[in-house]
Image 1 (cartoon, rainbow, N blue to C red):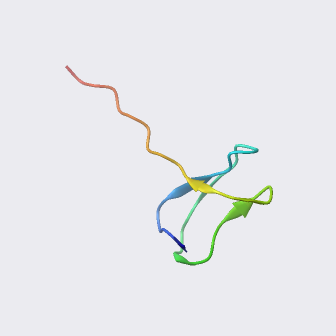
Image 2: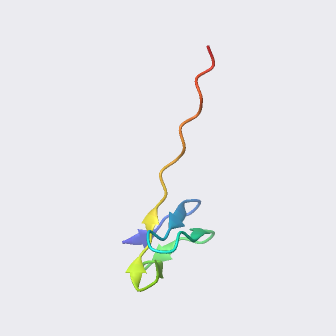
Length: 47
């Protein structure tokens, strides 16, 4: 799987995060596990 430019990856084990500044083939790993793409936070509704 290719790394996605501009996406933030987070380690489920230690909680560290990385921002991808250059896309390419391969996987980002930390603590001997592959880092997952962090889901965007929900914005509060403006009523």
